Length: 190
Image (cartoon, rainbow, N blue to C red; front, side, top):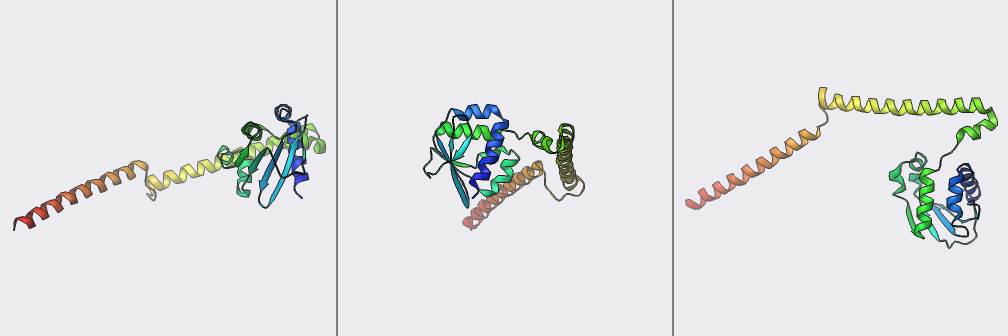
């Protein structure tokens, strides 16, 4: 059900990144299975590096991807790639993960077919600038709130405050042990 549109999307991205086609082409004839609950599909690598649907469930490499990882993978979050479960041919797995980390969608190229080259470049630039401004704004707000809650209206403890508190608790614990020893000595002497 999802195999054909997913393969079409993957092949489109691969075609936009010719280096990925040549890298994947070395694995021609090998099969890869993607398990993305509740869907799964198997594809085979062709000579040209493109993928086509394979009928067999047996695969040379298998990737199990939690649906919750998809947004993080789309945003190229490196930590998300480490959470993908994989098994099978380690060279094929390494190649696919490398391609997934480094392949880039040329949105301007696709958009230019509808709007023309100049408009497409401006739209993509606008979206990138907006994305950067939102990300920078969120970082600035979080830094300002952190500073406010640690300095002006202490709601959060700083690492040095936590370390100082831990030292004080340890010192209190040692003092209690010494007091307990004195009480026991005093009680034993009576």
